[in-house]
Length: 261
Length: 275
Image 1 (cartoon, one colour):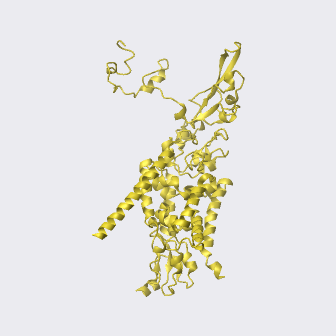
Image 2 (tube, each protein chain N blue to C red):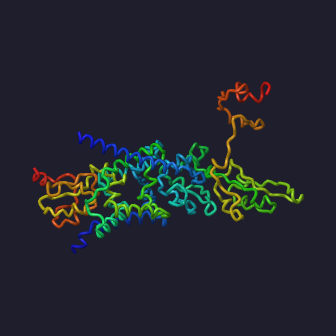
Image 3 (cartoon, rainbow over the protein chains, first blue to last red):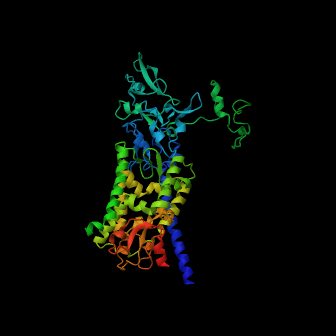
């Protein structure tokens, strides 16, 4: 049956070629997900969903009135064709009408993530809900921590006294001066990058990192007993534990508080 | 001017291709509101959403929710080409067509690639690439072709900055020049394959008139998708294959007026003549 044999061979070749191509393609794309340092526009969905839904159309880049957003070119070491910020060069100016988010046709930039219900129950844009990333301070190169007076990041912050505050520390070296230390607060910082742009050191000593990179996560086993609302954080923590030792027979919430340790 | 006549549709195609790039470029740099975005998705006149239907299909394959604008935009484009304009995206809109046409022209001048000779890869490969790109979209959760598309790379590059994107475009040029004539557009490109699949029923078609044909085969030599012209010299009919890009090259090279733009339905008198 040479005809049938030929057909089967052709089929096998096709399937083989498709498999090789598909595997190489999958491997290539898998590498594209591994850019942890990329800073997305306001309202960006979590990175995995963002990468799936962004069609790389550049409408957000066009919409940005400050030309701060960049559409990644091949060679930019960012996922090709997706929008991102380089804060040291051009930070986000926190437009109230958030034109970049509003322009997105695919929901990769999700306006509900940067909206708040007003008194009448309508969703209103609130740019301060933006979470591009979180500003992080290198205390070793920040001259304010050296004892030199500099509050550039604090002064330039659009949420001054909320996202960045100044904490007065005693200068132990001189014994008589104050260190005016900038402190970033994650519950207000939008990651706009104005501080990174303004920082006076050669390479910015305050810089924006994606939140997943810059932040830890509290354990359900530890609760701030002195904060009435912190208990809510563990409301859906699992009661049972999988580690079986004499200690772990008790519920995790009880093991510090009951019985002998 | 017989020489200009031989390129009249190519002239209009180049105008159309560059005008679309120009409108997008003006939309980005100068704030023109005719077309903003790029071929992946865009706004027409700031009110009508447009989107690449194949990109939307891949987005579905990633199992993510597709926003309404992209959905409507993809539908508008799919209906426009699928019901009306045929696979003309490839020859009248796609910027890569200028690159591959240049490669084809140079290859023929230099005698590197002879039309119709040495088929290195099958024309059916593109449909396999569609299947693989949907499968890869499913497995990786990313719209697979949109990440490697030389079309998107070129078009986006012109509007938003090319970076290293020219390397891929050059690779396509060399592939068409040295390996296979019309290699990318006619064999590999899944977007072209997608439009071929959805435009089988579109209205605007090339029509062949057997009575005028002198069997010189110029149309078959020039056609980037020769397999769509089995009727040449055989029967008078419309070119009904979705793989025809409506580029009009066959009309230009025909000295016998045996090819013309028309619609898929036969006029009554022609129908009786065939019968």
